[in-house]
Image (cartoon, rainbow, N blue to C red):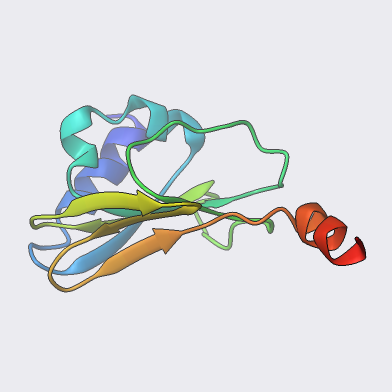
Length: 118
């Protein structure tokens, strides 16, 4: 059994109805089937601001710092076993259940500086 499958299995075993976090590298994320994403609340991606784009059906918060995961994962996947809905407004993307909300937004600091300088 490869590491990606072992991590996914451990991720599933954390219970139903509870919020859980799993660590995945980018290759493992790209291999997740659509059924897996149905129970993902959001993703925290670690790395640089120049990281390659990641197309996933959930909000992604990019943190410009190395991952603290002992497994060396490139992303934290926040998961909840329950009904969820997704949406967005302007720059804000969100996904929520009755109990939890995961939202992300990106602000280019250069845009803020340019707006303030004029």
